[in-house]
Length: 250
Length: 75
Image 1 (spheres, one colour):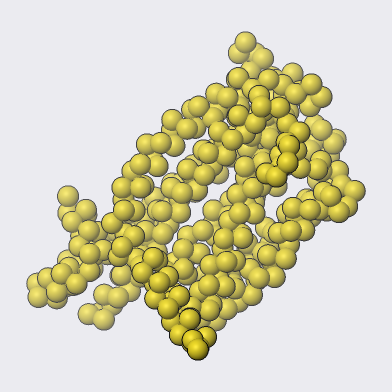
Image 2 (cartoon, one colour):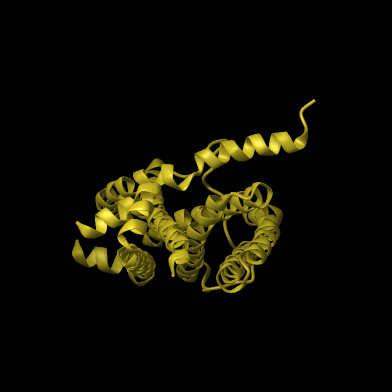
């Protein structure tokens, strides 16, 4: 009979090897260089499609172009929060320092995209709904997500000791994760100003390919940017940790 | 053509504002992140330089990460 302690130890060792800083660090520089050169090409192609090639919508006209920055921002803000919550829980159970460093690096990216989703959403709302903001289920739940990001970042930054700040951030991320399905399904559960999802990962999308191509190109640009920022922040966190290790000589 | 691109049938202000704020915010985060990374790389390399010869050799031998940061900084 295998005890739960043995299982945790085996999983912990496995994850420790995967997430070991020294094995990852050597490829970080190469990846940063790769993504830095790739992002300008992807951005040029993405913007050309989004601003020039994509046709205006027959109802929303040119305001539909806001979708190319609004939708990828919203998707990434939700994805980042979900990944962060998973890593906080894994770190809480298995106590792997590297997961902690990964979360420190991910959180600001999620915060940026949540802010962008809300701001560009407001700029899209004004010409289509006639208002910048409404206390609608989708918009309000996105605002709640922003507050959770702020709470997590503030607790990681200002609360000490580290164990306490991590516990608090884990708690906020778990509570905040309840909000993720609410954001996703708010447009189906309630009667909202915000339109229901046009792009479905299971089932047929109700959006024409002439809009889908620029949308996915811009999503790719956002993904490359996120990867670049993540790698740079992650490298900074590793360096900070190594610097702390040298304090023994002070 | 250029007029159409700027005004976008009256929606130009909303579209350009959305794209502008996105590019600005991303560029700002990139700049802050890069600046912070360079600062910590420099601080770590200086800390390694402050060590005695024996301590430095031992630390650089022990850690691949310290070795890489130190070599990159001295390039």
